[in-house]
Length: 325
Image (cartoon, rainbow, N blue to C red; front, top):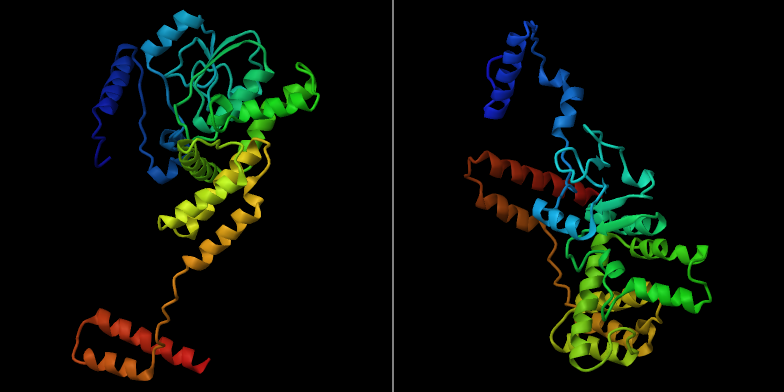
């Protein structure tokens, strides 16, 4: 080896191994292997879990006294598990199993700190399995899972879906009724996360505007939506923010099972008008002519810069071949 590691932790580990071998009369035969020949053994150390997050110990201790004792940490690794029993994403020392969704949560007091993208799936699993659960999520109001959890004015997907199912005659506790959490999850997953965020923020802007004027955001009156779009255009918005506002309001009504106010003729006409009134006139460029190229070459005729000569050559060759087509 020509060089060693600059990390003190690795040197301490090596010295610790050396001392153990020395104390126990163990002889090590060390062989250096090039990195490109050690890719399988080295691959695990290079994997990073961008979904990995945890709760501070003092918060866990407080909640454990309040609602515990917790018996199973469903989303953990050996270095951050809060319970003796835990599920992990990858195999690690002490894990009770990989993939928390592949096992039953019945009969346990479950500590749940899932990756944000798995929150809808986690909620569905909580309802399906027996047992006690404490779910911890970031206060991320634009996340796709937020309408499933927060019952407030505006979008409340869980409440709207539950009411729609009950109004249809489905009895509480029946198999059909137990499917509604999965239905909520599928409704949220019908669009990508970025699309949901865009629509959610668009709806929130609409909600802020219309509630300030004493009207309801959901369900919305078509004429109120038309007035909102008119206000956007009146304040200088282009057709893109108008369309985004339209789709945000449309999305909120669709996932809540409410009539779509954006199909009204007032609304659709204003959207079409936004495309006409805010479209910029195209500024057509003059085509490149032989005279322009001659002038360009004359300007740089004394240049000895290889980059300029290269660019001029490419321009002339391109012009020659395109003029032949």
